[in-house]
Length: 128
Ligand code: HEM
Image 1 (tube, rainbow, N blue to C red):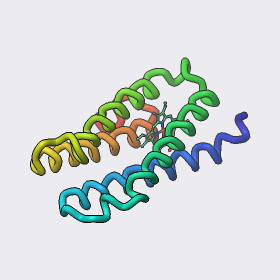
Image 2: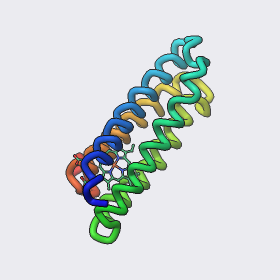
Image 3: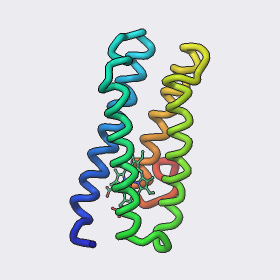
């Protein structure tokens, strides 16, 4: 299994990059009332990317072991839930564009925090 670590991590990181790029694009399209938001690809691709991101995350946890990395991995999982909730407010559930703008900015900050936790293996990430 360990021989798959580099490729799984590369898939995981690529999907993370695609996920935030897709989110920011859809957020901007929503704020601009762009028709691109309703394109088929805008609705389908994010699900494929996010599923791969999560599957690769699970495979990576199986390889590195949860026990030994519990602190920073738990922070990532919790922060991911926060990122998803903020993302749904930024794209849809926010009642006004003001709410959607603020929650979108917060979602981007939380995403950067998750990446910093991943890189440092520190549950406080860039907050330390
Ligand atoms: C938005 C969500 C996520 C982002 C942006 C993200 C980002 C990253 C990045 C950038 C790396 C490479 C770190 C490096 O070696 O420099 C990584 C590795 C990893 N991620 Fe994630 N990740 C996310 C979600 C998750 C989740 C939910 C889990 C666990 C359930 C997870 C588990 C892991 C593991 C185990 C590694 C391998 C760490 C190592 O190099 O030892 N990731 N992630």
